[in-house]
Image 1 (cartoon, rainbow, N blue to C red):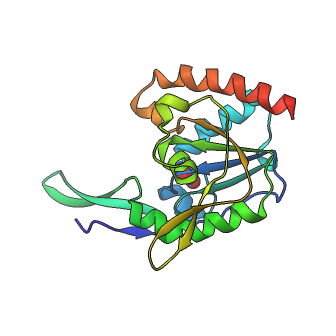
Image 2 (image 1 turned 90 degrees about the vertical axis):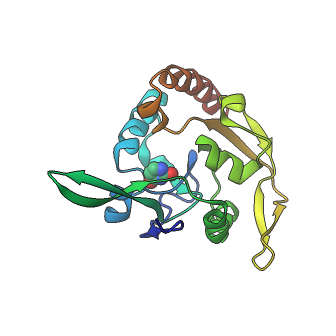
Length: 198
Ligand code: URA
């Protein structure tokens, strides 16, 4: 396996002053084919979350830590035929660094009332590795966010501005661990309250 295979490119999408800015991990196979963030299997689950909190997709800006699809090649045998299949994988730190200027730019120009990070990758990209999703999901974080200081040395700095960040689990996590769905809906109840206060 080549360790750093990536394919396609998906732009951020949504209004400049959204009610919510979603920061995900990286697009998957469906997204790199149609260019629409969160249009695949995880996107369908995410739509149910939006229905639950009563926010329309039109009022949401979608972005992610990495804009291409990181994948790994896995060899499978079907009917005595050897096939190479591509599977999604989490982006490496190097890939996150390579795509950092895009999210930095969006953080400076999009003015979301509320940022919602999905999973560990988006959360740690914005606020650092000391936060883990299992500990802080459903808790509002008011913080400056990480931005790349220097492309040559890969050093990070922090923005001057503070952002309101609400972390929850990635919708795809429930495919592997169904019990997380209950946790996510508890988080969504808190998010709903939070949005009403704004
Ligand atoms: N996860 C993401 O972060 N983005 C997508 O578009 C799909 C899944």
